[in-house]
Structures are given as C-alpha cells and as structure tokens.
Image (tube, rainbow over all chains, first blue to last red; front, side):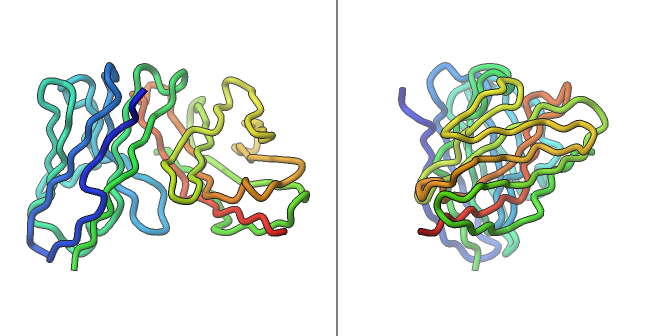
Length: 115
Length: 110
C-alpha cells in the first residue's frame, strides 16, 4: 500500500510569513494526526481528526495554527503568522483503527525553518 | 497528565553487547506502551507494542507497573540497530493519542 504522503519536504520562511503543509493519508485510514517535533524533543500531537471531524486539538496554538480535513481524506496544516519557535518537523500520521491494534503510519515529515 | 521520560539522549555500545534503552512513564491509569524507531533517512515506524508481548528484530520490552518502566532490551546489538528510539504511551480513553518521550539515539560501534 502507498504510504502517508506529505509535502513539501522542506520549507524556509521568514517570521511573520504564512505557510501550509499538506498530507495525504493511506487510503481508507479514518484517523489522521498532525504532530510537531522540535529538534531534540519527541513528537507532540497538535491535532487529531476522525474522518473530517476534530477529535483533539487541545495542544494546537489556535491563534496562529489551523488545520482542516475536508472530505475526510487530505489534510492541510497552516501557520499564520509564523514565529521562530515554530521551526520543527511537522509529521502527519494516519491509522485505520485503534492505535493499540494498528499503530500509526507516519509520513516523512515537512521540515520548517523560520528565520 | 501523562509523561514519558527517556533519560539517555545517546547510548553507545559495541556490536554484540547487550542493549537496554530506558523508558519511564507517569500515568495514573493503565497505559498502553509502544516503542517506535527511526532509522537514518527513514520514517518513524512502530517497533513493538507491549500488549502483543512480541519480539521484533530481537528486541523485547516488559512493562513493569511497579517501577512504571518499559525498557527496551536486546541481548546482542547489531550494527543495523543504530537508530533513534522513541518510547510512547497511550492513556486509557486517550482517543488514540500518543505521548512520546524525547528519544534515545542508539549507536552500535564495531
């Protein structure tokens, strides 16, 4: 099966600019996650979708971050305006069922550098 | 609140030596625990789950509720084991959310 696709792979922007990341999960995976991984830290959940509904966005900085999953398939994560501390790898993952049974399948991530 | 602690940022061992990657967790209920691995230039991927009690690539992990630990072990390290290892926890009723530790870089030297 095809994996989780993410684009772009790398992005460099100036602070206060906006940026968007795209994720295409594995076909049929109802649950989609966006994680933020800052250098030297483990991945931290930003938002979880079940189909096109939000399950958990408690750690999403909603003043600058937004995400959507229209039609329950692809998803986009946007940052506007970006800050220096947003420099990180943004990981998308999907799962077909309970994580205890299926785990996550991760994409290769988008590395964002804010200068 | 749930937390995962991996005290070692880097663990360096010689090929053939035993490996133990430490993971401690903080959670008030009964957690589900996982180990994820990221090889150089590859994606983060699931290595093993405590519930399955499986051995993957020679690695095992035992959940010790008394010590709130889930250490990853392998009796004889191989060069191809060099990677970044993350311990992760899912709390009961956590809606599939995983909380990750900060990771341990394992380097197996010849």
